Length: 379
Ligand SMILES: Cc1cc2nc3c(=O)[nH]c(=O)nc-3n(C[C@H](O)[C@H](O)[C@H](O)COP(=O)(O)O)c2cc1C
Image (cartoon, rainbow, N blue to C red; front, side):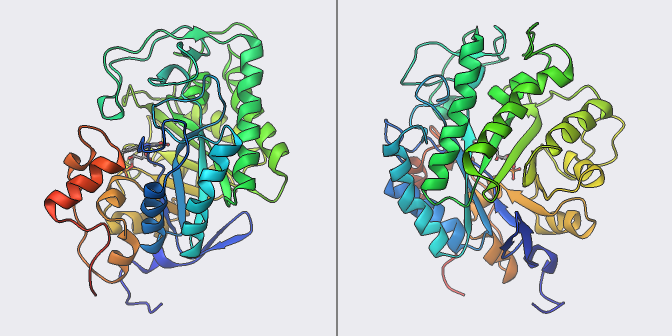
């Protein structure tokens, strides 16, 4: 690519886990609650994910996908990787994305106390019996306050770890290029890390080191299940879906979390922040991604308000991240990379596409009604 091409550093090749990536652009994981009621991915999902690959994203990360047939499902119509039928249903999605030259990574998620729709059980579990703040998410079909979860028994903690390992293995069998362990946004792994949600007095709670025992155990179990060569990343955040103001205790806590997890056999760290160009917390100059770049020797993905390509490029040019993940701006522009590369204008997201439910049927109707194509037409 010539030096004069717009935002050239976004289009330099990169590598994760020894695999070469076409560019630095990642589709952020986004829950669309569009699977069959039994958690099988659909042909509509296949076409949706294929569009992002066709649109030029180097890596497509799927929406949070549940891991077991017990407490992990967070939303009705969420896809799973909890059984053979769900694994098979992902295969056409995986093939479609790969056929466009992108990599596809399954985000593995356990809803924990933020669960608001689970067809297997009628209660929610979490490290401790602490209800998340606020109300369940209407655009994922929830209503009213979150129930207070039941504190997990030791046996249930082990089952949840085994669920992640088995789901990762299914992802590998389905042809995914990797898995991302969802430890962000207030779901189960994040709840174990956060002192507000983890008040346990056994080996899984107490000091920060002990609160990290569960995510570390999940990483180790997943790694053991998939072997050394399969890509395993982790997503972290301070913010919770239910509490965007939540921050870690300070730089020391942030560094301890990053170093402890960074010492494990991971291939990348992915950070979800409100704005990845602003300081993450007091005493830190840059984002969590920038802090990880400073402290660790692992590929880093930054996310949060990077829909403006100049902003995204600045982070890469200043070595504050290796990759950028685009969320809402990608919903408005499934071909965000191609548009930017060819100097075409980007569309702003119209939140009406996610209302009343953030599912794909609703988005398709919105496109039809407003005459908005998913991919840029012409040129
Ligand atoms: C509709 C929607 C669904 C989301 N679902 C997930 C999810 O399943 N897993 C996850 O880690 N983050 C999820 N997120 C958060 C995004 O990945 C991303 O972190 C957030 O939108 C901020 O990035 P942005 O400013 O580029 O949109 C979701 C966001 C949106 C808008």
